[in-house]
Length: 283
Ligand code: SAM
Image 1 (cartoon, rainbow, N blue to C red):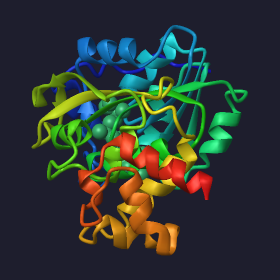
Image 2 (cartoon, helix red, strand yellow):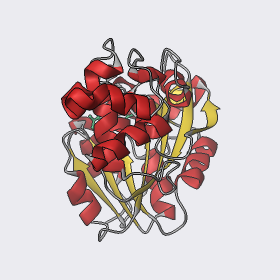
Image 3 (cartoon, rainbow, N blue to C red):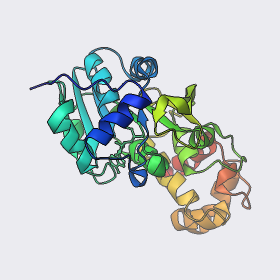
């Protein structure tokens, strides 16, 4: 049954609630609770259309959970921290259309979560724990599940990594995988005063639209295989990294895609990764 959650709409209220429960924010779980109602609504509005199925990562004290669930037809939220799970049971409650999966998002059976949406397309949203933001985004991008869009609070450094261009120092496998889809957007930045405790890095809301691939020449599974092989050893040349796939043909395959043998993976455009994936399909 749903309960009326405690009012947690300012850093002071969140601090007082945690104190009353004998809890404190856990740095090891990246706990910075968002307590600005305006920002919570802006995130939910950007995350999904009314009536969508939503997977939330990191329920926390349920602030975003409740706002998202008010828009969603069904919501699954994942939380690792037993203290927060207890607080949810004792005081915060969950809306009737929401279920909590207890555990580590990196170990969660995402296919089971997707199946609970009746295998319908779904949206992912979360104020992500910053110690594993990159790993969570990689997991979602690589999942092959019918995710329509990812809307997430990330540290600005990750937003910059997603927006990096080939040749930039922060261009990596995450950027290249996201590059399969239409360019990830940074929707807005969020002041650290909107959280309790205030994070010591700048934060931004990013959105990756997975429903509209920018690269359509090859299926994502094939593109992903090439990106992962190309970035296997970041310091090695693309020729060395791709030898495991193309063997003695590697040099000619690279040439046919207009790629220098001495290039590094971080210099390639999504179209060049797609070209390599196409060559692998033709093998
Ligand atoms: N959604 C809440 C909000 O907006 O206030 C909490 C956001 S807080 C930045 C990140 C949340 O993710 C915390 O509740 C934390 O306990 C949870 N978390 C951390 N690591 C996790 C993991 N590996 N799997 C699932 N949840 C995790």
